[in-house]
Length: 102
Image 1 (spheres, helix red, strand yellow):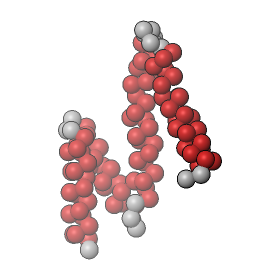
Image 2 (cartoon, one colour; image 1 turned 90 degrees about the horizontal axis):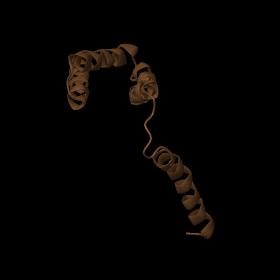
Image 3 (cartoon, one colour; image 1 turned 135 degrees about the vertical axis):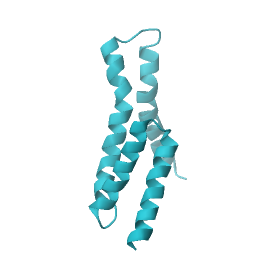
Image 4 (tube, one colour; image 1 turned 30 degrees about the horizontal axis):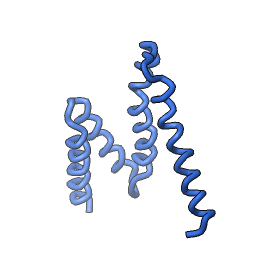
């Protein structure tokens, strides 16, 4: 491995590591306002939705396949099931649907 590649890997590691560790160092011992805390608690859900939704519309040959899977996952999640069960239920329903249609 050449020195250029090694320095490139080290630089990329620093660029991704520093933004992750900076909040821990800057806000150590400080408490954020309640509004900021409530907004930050919803960031993972918004990010997950933004990552999954395009895939729901583009899966397979039919849009109904993705919408069915999303609907099942939404219903099971709304009931309050564990995330693993939500994913497994969508997989099971879509597997049965693909066997029934084929």
